[in-house]
Amino acid sequence: MTALQMNYTSEMEKAMVGAHRVNYATYCHKHEVRMRVERRREKEYAQSQRIVADLTRNQLR
Image (cartoon, rainbow, N blue to C red; front, side, top):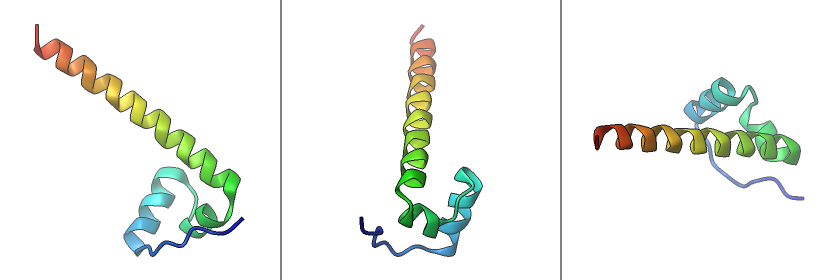
């Protein structure tokens, strides 16, 4: 398996460590870490979509 070929900034590194407690190099090189992070991102996205839907529904009342 090849590593992701991405350029990243120090701000991206800080955000990755802050949000997922893993540095970007580890994220790029370790498939299991990448999958764990991406599953968490999907879960957080779905949760945010439910919150938006609830707020929208409440505003329409």
